[in-house]
Length: 377
Image (tube, rainbow, N blue to C red; front, side, top):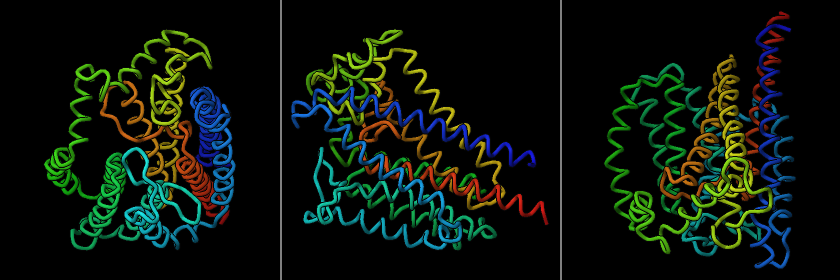
């Protein structure tokens, strides 16, 4: 076995081990964080755990399928998958199909199946961006042929997400797109000019919606309205601070007794920190840092451009979501409806994330097989 193959195989094993640990943490703390709320609302403390189990089974099935799909099929169906998921996301604009939760219409109800199409869009958008950046490899400096079409795709995607509204996902995918274009060697001056020109737009979008401005003001001083807008972040900080060094013990959280809202979704990290303390929180953060490091290391070792860009995109978007979630929970960023990848309750996100892992493993192993074949010949 040649050195690069051996390194990639080792990285795959480490990568899968980290994902497995994150999934185990998710199972434990979804139950711990949601048991009281589930018992009160659904008369079963296992309600969310059972739902999470269903999502985990579907996600693992998607992982296994996408781990085996031929690479040529993945490339062939990238455009179709993207435009289909974009249309599904646009269906949330219509009340006949959308499900309104927490002030947003991000969920779609199709024949009784309720899911969040923007999560599927997250995956297919990265695949499509990688497809276009690979296809236009020899015209990356062209504004007309490459950069403007890429910006149009990004703009359409961001507008659809903002319409829901899903400001967090729009920002996350925009940052991921710029990361992909940077890695693909799109001229840096194009990116810097676009980013600079986007700052006034972001400020306008914040000022345009009163609730976004309120979130910024609450982030700056949550104690100005401790029983209203600042309640959630204050309770999150109390939970994290209560954990001290070793935590109060798994299942012994006090904040989950209807003090901290969304304790099994957006703010599950706060419960983890409360129950496992500083070292438990540090362990979780370390897992995400290792996921980022090993994922990017695998990507840099891939000889295939499309595979490299897909892996980078999936790792970056997952890491950004983790960073934003942790920043929100610790009061370092305004509140956003973004869960902790592989841990927070949310079946569409879980299924999508596991499908992305399946594609990563598929593309990395395909690269190993291709390298083996090229060496033999």
